Amino acid sequence: MLESLDAPALRRWCAGALAALRRHQSEIDALNVYPVPDGDTGTNLVLTLTSANEALVFDPIAEGDPTPHGQVLRLMARGALLGARGNSGVIISQILRGLADATSPRPAVDGPALARGLRAGADAAYNAVADPVEGTVLTVAAAAATAAETTAAAAGSLAEVVRAAAAAAAEALALTPSQLPALARAGVVDAGGRGFCVVLDALAEVVTGEVLAETRLLPAPRASRPLVAARESGSPDFGYEVQFLLDGPEPAVEKLRARLSELGDSLVVVGTGEGDESTWNVHVHVNDVGAAIEAGVEAGRPHRITVTRFADQVASDGPDRAAVVVAAGEGIAELFASEGAAVVGANPSTRELLAAITATGAAHVVVLPNDPNTQTVAAAAARESTAAVRVVPTRSPVQALAALAVRDPAREFDDDVIAMAEAAGACRYAEVCHASRDALTVAGPCRRGDVLALVEGEVHLIGADLAETCRDLLDRLLGGGGELVTLITGADAPPGLADGLRAHAAAHWPFVEVHVFPGGHPHYPLLVGVE
Image 1 (cartoon, one colour):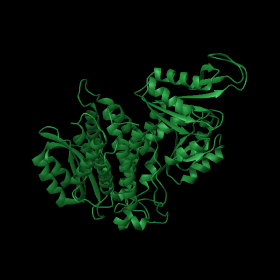
Image 2 (cartoon, one colour):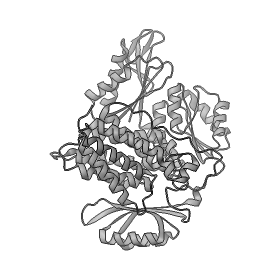
Image 3 (tube, one colour):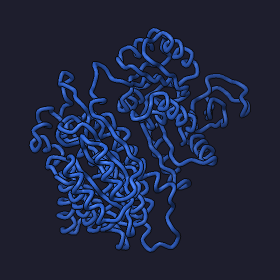
Image 4 (cartoon, helix red, strand yellow):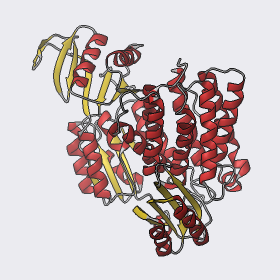
């Protein structure tokens, strides 16, 4: 239980929030009405937090800074702003900026400091939006801040403040359908608010060491509900989303705000607040794209310009892309399903794999076989399919998780496949099992029942004790470098194995993030991935 948030804890929060958003990405994307259908909030939040996390990786904390926690928050906020996608991403970046501004001058982020930071973040988010709408992430953030302030005023600890904020956010999220009729008609809660709850729950987990109960969602929209162009907010009167970064002075940006307000809606303009010429993130929905970009040129130097035509995103009778994953174990199947993938049982036939590809109804399908023996079967199914099928040669479920985490529907399909293959290839994988017979391995002779640790298919360690061999395997893998460790426990994993490995990593590899999932797969008590 933490009494205050220091720089390492904030780093763990950033990585944990990103991992949680990736797990819930498809679920949040499916909450696609605000106040007209919105199909990409989960994706936008993942991309925004990815940029925040990268800022912490590539911009290390300066030595001797009196408030390193402030540096971490400022880096997170700037990274989120520069990588923000859509309204939801920009708003989250402003919540982070408010947190940074309010807590950076303080020697420690305790309960009262966090409460002030959440209030500053909520206020910054409201100020960033030209026309704030209740029943959105803004409402959820404000409710969290109010609960945090009330708890802090009663001398609440950091854990009590963050628990209160998370609980109030969940309650406010559940009320969003009563504030926005479009949400009530669709039977869903606000997508951006749901994403903020995921981020806040990740903070509570870092502070308390406990995993909060999942926020209860309203039922998903019925499949028969008409699907229309995906957009993050605003009226259906404007056909394009324009977003860009702008380097320019604040007086010129004020004129830009006024001009863009005349051209469209869903306007958000926020800046880093650094120097005479800040960097600003500009987001607007318009019909006249040229006029919006021209207004940016007049205000300063626009760059990283993106234009999305909503009509091009109208949903068809089936999805454009899908992923099919081969996996054994109920836990692993649920894990891949939460990533939006279709799951096929281990060792499928070509017919079974082809049926799964066809059942997705997608025009473009990625297959992740997770086993060298299944790669040939996957290739055969790809040849027989009428869809465009690509096989990413994953050899372990941990590689498939790494591949799914980098999917980006904004990329060309083949470019996305390449990115997934690169992510899978960069993930070193290992597994632990018991020898089924006496044998001679590259690590020496083993006897039936010995514990074997295999790294990328080759036996590297032979031991008598499962927990000890797993710890030695973790040390060997991390000795070659790594920032993120994924542990998936099998059906035969003894109680406490994962907790012991997490504690070992915390003691010996403190800057490594460790994520644990129950896999329920047979034969292998532990699967390990290092990225």
